[in-house]
Length: 280
Ligand code: CDP
Image 1: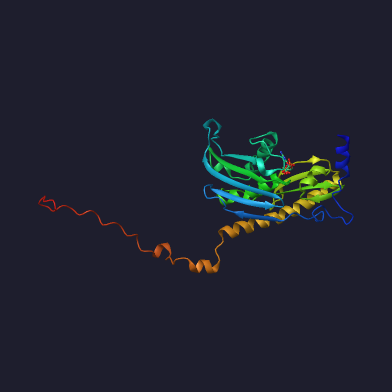
Image 2: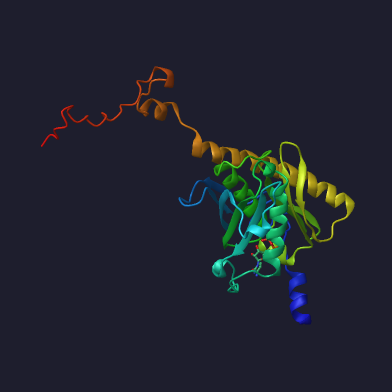
């Protein structure tokens, strides 16, 4: 055991040029790609690839909350289920909820509860499913970011999008968006979710320790990163819903509603002749 600890402590996460294991500088994020509307059956959905993370988010609702005793007559429930697929990690993950996934589901539900206009849907629920297909640290941030655009895709009224990213400390250096080895062998990891437009913090967790100065630096870094992610989210939504000028001109021509001819009605059934003779 002592030997393992010795090896772990010796693992260098930043080289002599100040670069990380994957060649990133401390303030660099991993590549991110996101897409909206990837599932047909859900009301809203999104897929995100973030470094080695692959995450699907699906949203249903607002729909009648079940079981009924959970219904709140004043507002909708915002419920999230975060789940890691057994094949998402190196060691097969036992299927089903565990303490970690229950905790992550709870903090994500609470983050969205404060942005969704839940008072508009009493007795209803908005259900968010986050499926981690492949994990490489930062999955709750990737899940939150994907779920936010899936909620928008489902047309759920919200104050704004929520974006998320983690920041941490490795080999004594504050670094953005840790990957798994950095998360495992680093000194601290701090996932943050915000409403980027207002700067309101909806989630902030901390694993490890940061000094006050390190915290200030880390928070500044993650805030900027979250601003960039917000732009990517809006781009992904635009890609899904925007219509280009060419596409618009290809659309079948439609007169504005007030000039449209009334819809053709089926001719009413013919009246039988007056003398009561039924036509053959
Ligand atoms: O994923 P996130 O950083 O939000 O949460 P974490 O609890 O800090 O987990 C960090 C990483 O550890 C995950 O992203 C997985 O790559 C890995 N992990 C694992 O290999 N097996 C688990 N049962 C849980 C996490």
